[in-house]
Image 1 (cartoon, helix red, strand yellow):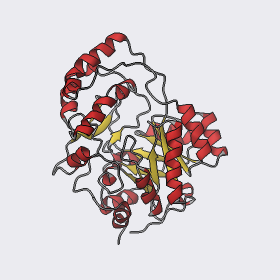
Image 2 (tube, one colour; image 1 turned 180 degrees about the horizontal axis):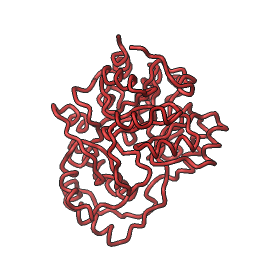
Image 3 (spheres, helix red, strand yellow; image 1 turned 180 degrees about the vertical axis):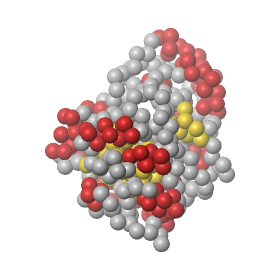
Image 4 (cartoon, helix red, strand yellow; image 1 turned 120 degrees about the horizontal axis):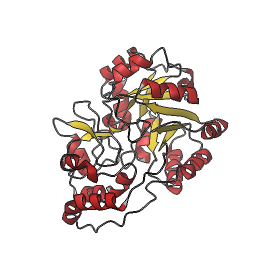
Length: 349
């Protein structure tokens, strides 16, 4: 398969393959996964949205100790903090009491802040100076964009609709990840409470090719070498894969998560129940039982913080019941060997 990188900003990275290994915050994106992906000639990505500045520095140091290849660090664009009234917290506590009882967890003492401080995270990015800063959930401000430019950092935004892609191009990004509805994990929709446009990757690519001038990185349902060939032929300059790498030896995917990924048929859908934002994952008990009770689901990122203890305890117990099992719609057995071997197999021939 041809591996030339089309699009000047991407060519400047000096990658061997037109491949981004997706940022997967919350565990799967380990330093080892990023190192292996970047050393193999793809662009490894650190999902740092839930990390404080010290943890981001530690992660980047580990990567740079073992490879001098480019890598990306990914964050969430912040929005105004949601108003969460006491009644909403009480509804959420009542709806999840049975799970905390099963896991011997105390009633949470829940309060703001609900997420890491973006400006502190971003200042850390400027000090680290990764080759790429990627982001989801909106536009980077003009001041942040200029600061990244001055630091020589490439910018990659994420779009789920043509209007978002156009806004990203107008804001000055170097490339855009087009996230089809098939993609696993959080949907990159700009507004946290907006409806999902539900545009399939091939349709989204067709709507943006020839209209958006910056390079397009396609994401969503891409699992195999043939998927990659078809996506590049359809106009993408590169592809982004996440689910395909979840079972690799370097991924930090938990044992119960891996077990569900290994099931013969992975049934996925989008949900707000884990974080308050739409995200695609494998159906499980928490998704099924909480979906009819959406009035007990707080907005993002409050819900994400609220369910963190449940997800952690479920993983520790070895149960997938309360885990956010993010995965895309791609089918088939997942690669369980090394990341470098998977990358070579994806571009063989």
